Length: 534
Image (cartoon, rainbow, N blue to C red; front, side, top):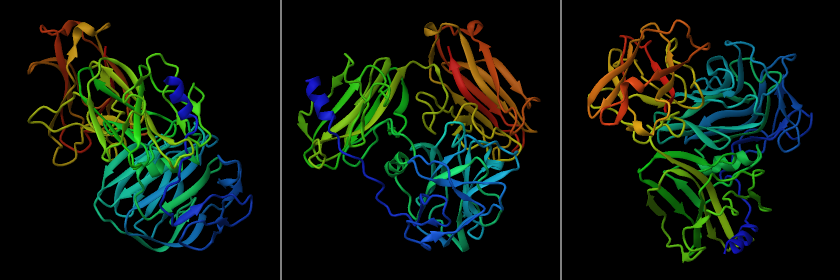
């Protein structure tokens, strides 16, 4: 039966592009010619470039937009007056591996319009090296961390959803979500620039390249962002399409990574599958190992999709008897509890519209383990089993840097996410608290609590770390005041380690509480990352 399924996989259908039409679309594929051709529905058919050139080599083998500090840098004038009334998506490819950041106050503006409430995207400066900031237009800042750097071409997208949030994506994966006011209209009286900003001469710098720049007047979905990313980077993982959608606890794959999440041993999680193909026979294949990328054993298909489950794995399991049941017409949600281990899965449906007759959704890897800490990178929610004690202010999972100047880190110790206390009013003197999931001390090998700690700010309070054994707290460490060796845009984190051997609870199990008493002002944000209990 495995051989039959392999044969079916080999004829997978091709992926479709994002269904929305962009207002502006520049691929910079006209060699060294100036201006650039606009393939969008707004503005003139071409865009003159001021201080920028076209050349280099883009991901698709043609030319791209490139910065040149030897020229007077302003960026390309699209001739389009900014008018975004029902949402925004800005998406582009960027490559900066040959660029050296000039300094913390140097900006490289990637797009924007000063007359539209200083609406823009930029790197360096307040964004920090290797990150990009989406700012202005009446919206709260949205940071896209680790958005470019030594990794080569990267696809970056910012989405403002008028329902009340903004989202940042790197290579098709969601990396940050920020609450926003609803129904914001971003309207200017001047024209929008690409590769620069109408309020500054600072644009793409030497060693910075851009390709496939697009602006939409709507909030694209995660699946549509994924489709755009395929044209920028090499696809190594299958992603969801309307014909085959697959997620685990809401986590799905990107074009360069499987969906990845961890749950605590004994916890129940939800496997969700859906298709728009009527009466489709369906299957969920999973293995007792992670899914495979292209080049790591996965099958690359002529239509552009990739089969990521390991068909040769002896532990390969078919959930539905190898396409044994027709689809019922509604989404299928399965609540699952699994023993400890690593699992990889992928969803498939029969599809008469595909050349092979089958279409596959994305791949998801799942790690099931007891409570051993968290790097907070799985989502912007608390890790499984972690909780906020009653009567205190919650800690916050964040990816965008603490919002106040002079307090807290500008980014995680290891990207993208970290945990912090926001001490702006009314919480400048508040008590914060968070409990980890329950640790079975009999499973530990070296009895260490390791974590990264950030204490930047003039009014740092006191962090108290305790064992919480059934509501009884035993202090194991305290940290008071600012770390004199830390400052923003410099050393922002310290690696800490606490020996737990003297504190083994009598019952053998306890959670670990991180309690923080704020120091009286907004400059007292404390932050944690990479909490490891082992």
